[in-house]
Image (cartoon, rainbow, N blue to C red):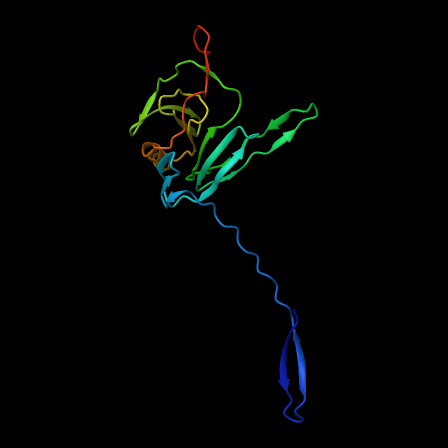
Length: 208
């Protein structure tokens, strides 16, 4: 729309139309991802946990890795970007991994679970190797990446729908904050059912 301003010439009373430049639309900022619950407390009716409010929410509710891994939330002071699936010439799909950067003093926490793929065998794998707060977990450490897996009520480890807290940091203080998230974890009344998530296993022991 062209905007005009009326100017009155004092000498003769003539009105001159003075054009002004049209305003440029202002780009709206992309809203930050939001989480169910209240600030600092995640609660979606299935699970709940606390998290530091000074950690930015980097992503939330992201299906990725060919739709097999579902990312519940990514938090932290580092950076994270989603992996991209790439079609191959033979018709297969290569599932790229996420890109994570957590320089000195920074942290990135990804909370995810496996939501697809073939049903694994039921091996009775319920043995935890650590306890964090009230939660018996399986903890793994690979360099600066620490992960804690929590099994479904009545379920097994290494199964679909088990939440995994994957922490990227070399800072002990940041790692302690992430561990406090795991310690605050609770299953809620609408927690997923374990029924049918694995197939009856043949006689023998689970693979190493």
